[in-house]
Image (cartoon, rainbow, N blue to C red; front, side):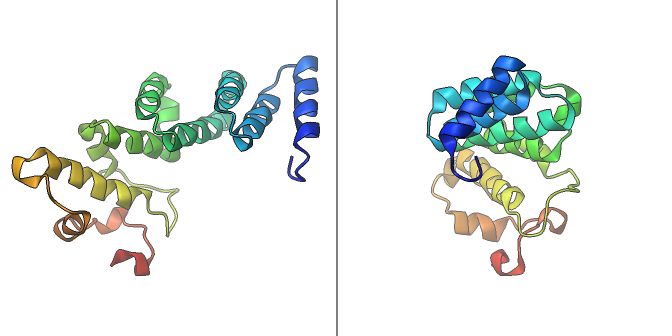
Amino acid sequence: MEQGNYQESDTMAKDSITMSPNPLAYYNLALLAKQQKDREAFETYSKKALDLFTGDALVAASTQYFRYLLSMNEYEQIWIRYQKLPDWMKEDERLYLVAVAAAVKIDKLDFVKGAFEKEYVYVKEGETLISDLWFEYHLRLEEKKPEGSNITMEEIKRRYPIPLRIDFRMEQDKN
C-alpha cells in the first residue's frame, strides 16, 4: 500500500481475511477505502477491525476512526460510541480529546469543561487541539448569553487566556 499499488494491497488483504479474519487486514482495507473516498466501505471495514482489535491496537484504531467521524462532522456518532467504550479506553488522552472535540459541537459543555481540569502527558508542544477547544468552549458559553451572540473569536481570546498547564501551542501561535 505504501508503494501505491492499491489493487494488489486490496487483493492481499482480502486473501488474508479469507484465510483467517484478522484486524490488520480489515484495517488496511479501511485505509484503502478512505483513500478512495468510499465512506461506506471505510466504515464497514473499520467496524470489523474494531471488533477484532484488542488492547493498545484497539485504542489506536478507535482514535483514528473517531477522527474520521470528526472530519465528517459525525459528532453525535462519536458521542454515542464514546459513551459505550470501556473505562480503560476512555482514559486514553487522544481518544478522550476527540470525544471532547465532538462534545463541544453538540453542547455537552459540562463534559468539555472537564478536559481543562486534566493533566496531559502525551500532548506535544505545538499541538493546538486543547487550545482550540478552550476557545470554542468559551465561545459556546458566551453564545448562550443573550448579549453574547455577536462575540468574535478575537474577543474570546482576549477575555479567556488559556491556562499555562494546558497551553501547548508554539510561542508564535500564542498571539
